[in-house]
Image (cartoon, rainbow, N blue to C red; front, side):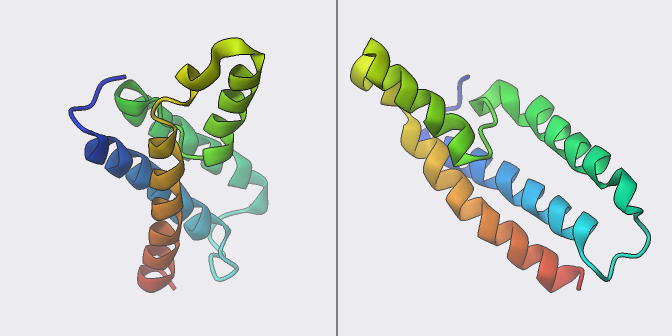
Length: 111
């Protein structure tokens, strides 16, 4: 994946996470009576697929620190060393910023 700067990568990851959290809040909010509970997994999965398809070519679309950091830890301890931690901060800081932003926007705009 290539983006021109660290700031751009953090923004992309924050945006992807914010979009995911916004979608989850919108889909699962108790006041949302239009969506049947049986279709919720499909809608959330579709949101994740769209995020990965659009942001994946740019940063890999981590959108979840655990999804990225766990494999990094394993590769670190199994011999890759500090090489496995290159860019890890992007995939930790971005989602930690984007999650609350998506939640605030969803609660502020929708409900």
